Length: 53
Ligand SMILES: [Zn+2]
Image (cartoon, rainbow, N blue to C red; front, top):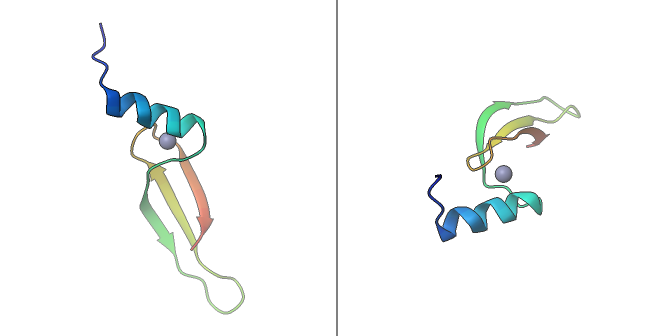
């Protein structure tokens, strides 16, 4: 059986609510009006998203 602790339960709940714990895994620096884009990954659920830097 999978070990469940309180912090991982809370973390999973936060992810379901959209509050991920992102770390930056890649960043593209834009020039002028283009702007930069960061690729971020949630260290809890592993979802990967891009966002404006
Ligand atoms: Zn997450």
